[in-house]
Amino acid sequence: MKGNPMSRRRILRTTAPLLAVALLAACGGTTQGDQDDGGGPGGTDATADPNAEYRTGLSVAMLPKSVNNPYFEASSSGAESVVNELEGAYEYTGPSDASASSQVSYIDTLSQQATDVVLLSANDPNALCSSLEQARGGGTVVVTFDSDVDPGCRDLFVSQVDSDEVGLTLLEMTAEQIGGEGEVAVLSATANATNQNAWIDAIGAELESNADYAGIELVDVVYGDDEDEKSFSETQGLMQAHPDLKAIISPTTVGIAAAARYLSGSQYQGEVALTGLGTPNQMREFVEDGTVAEFALWDPTALGELAAYTGAAAASGIITGAEGEVFTAGDLGEYTVGADGVVTLGPPTRFNADNIDEFDF
Ligand code: RAM
Figure 1 (spheres, rainbow, N blue to C red):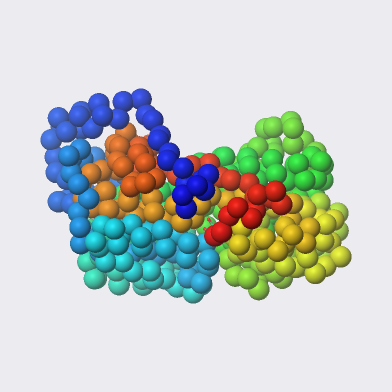
Figure 2: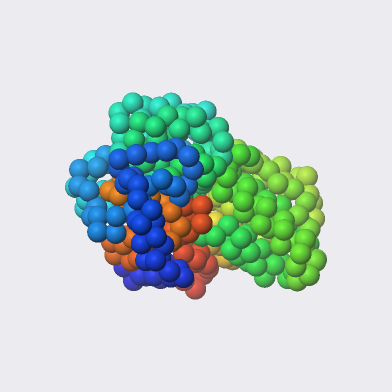
């Protein structure tokens, strides 16, 4: 991923990270590896050891929303390369449908296996909490990435991009493509997905508060459940229900690819705008055939790398999840833990006919 603008070294600065670590150290306590209070982010009774190094031999599992999604496969390849480098054992496991109830049994199995680190993209903010609580009680470090749970149910969250920034980017692209006027609809993933719901909320808030978007009306939100066929038919349904629709925003890689396939074979191609979050490899043909002008995403491989480093850092006592802690995520550079145990990867990149061929994921 070197040379990819999204993977450039990223140094996030905080006011006084070292001071924060020193203050925590002065309060005494134990390292993450020795304890788990399960009591929320920030590891209130734990301290990080700034001299600790990444432990070798960690067992790390990634549990995506669902398998067979190229987005999560890219994240998995990033995580796997980090775990290999740290001489650990890596596993990628999860359900074929993006539902929280399906994820529960995977969490339970991983915790029975005493997995050191679980990297989880959650299908629901609350439904996984009791399983996660049990896993953490047994010493497993739980790092969510991509889609969070309630902060009290995990150690850290590796966020791709600040949610408001995602919402804003989606709206900006939409407004540019429809000249700031008209009805728009959202084709989302599942109804309980923490990440998509945060982005949709951000779009709604921006529409209400920003006069630049006064001409845009959000008329519908539908759910394709991150399933290709359901997303395809929901797109068809949107077009039937809203004959004046000017744009579809699909903040899911599965949804946008299915919607593009529908539009490209329909009378709406080039007439109804489609934007959202997609992988360049899935969207290339639809940019080339004129169905899609511009969409965005972050680097999912780098997201997986950062999640793996974050989990390994927590399992090694380098960080506990407290705000202000700093750690080095290999070639990605130095990162600082933010409020609520959140570590943020970086801004999204927009893809269009001018740059899409520079990307291969
Ligand atoms: C899908 C998933 C994932 C989301 C991307 C943009 O692959 O819903 O959670 O982050 O789209």
